[in-house]
Length: 457
Image 1 (spheres, one colour):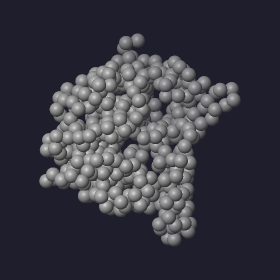
Image 2 (tube, rainbow, N blue to C red):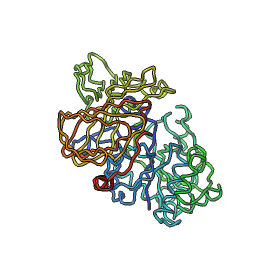
Image 3 (cartoon, one colour):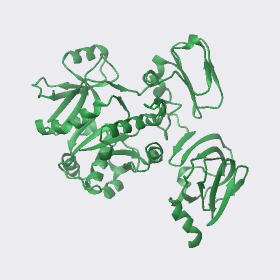
Image 4 (tube, rainbow, N blue to C red):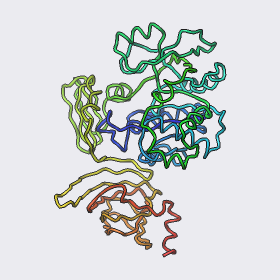
């Protein structure tokens, strides 16, 4: 059985900590069993390891999240990369083709699809493993997990069983689905035995490959990547699940929670305060999450969330926090904080002048032994001012050592890279006509290959 975690999201619902580069699953606001900060993706990956499932698991994600996944989970995690952000049907189609044409997975192998950020107990992954047996026992084409509802919720979709006789393990045939009903309808559905749809389902790999063939899509990863932008941006639920007749659901009567909004996330945080600040005793039901270096003081406020990051500051009543996605709809902003495989950076200042010149200032941290790729830029120059640590840098095939206090100038077109000999921090000032990721022209990544550039020139 192969497990695939879908990692996507636009980063709006947990703004300002989340953004287009750092979606909610990467926020280190939970606590690990060792008492250390832990993100949702780190928690799920740890649980998969504890269940003995990590070796057979993959993450499907867009290019923009690859480095953050590697930063948080390590470089050995198996990643299936989407050429661009689409909906879940294109992502799962690409995943199936990758497993078949690159990994050599056989058509009769079971594939389970999960969201990357379920907040669950360990028994949930045992239930996921049982989906293979559910397919075998029923002859169904799709097997889902449905969470036994704790209360009538308007936030979740519902899986409606057909009322047929359940198998020994409780597996039931499915008659239909209903997305986010009102409270009265939710109560009626629960009375009929309906279950919350947690977005987990399994199928035989050959089942989906046949669907792709019927749609005239290629079954090789390279070819489907080329045609990816032509695929309809539609959810797997609409395109496949709701069109299927032979479908069953396995009830899960255990802990499950969607930490998709600030009010649900703060319920599971170990402390009501993270980062610099002061909260008075009569603010005990409020929550402060501060990633800035300036302190925030909260006085006499109940049931309020205050979240601050380089991307902005949010102040909201807990019950109103889900409105953030609606409020930010249509707004575009450069991400002001990003994690990379080598470390992280924060944007300190960004100015775009009328004469079309841009200036971007970052504070960059690179972990000991990590390096950035050997690269150059055509539209910008950079100045690096080192704050702490020691590093080796290569400029146009020449090696230099730098330390705190040194300043390095990198004109446009200069090939450059840096290896942190210790933890390193420096201020980078970019100046140019267009400061975009597409202007990072990468030559090579591995430091050993970068060192060889000195002798190739």
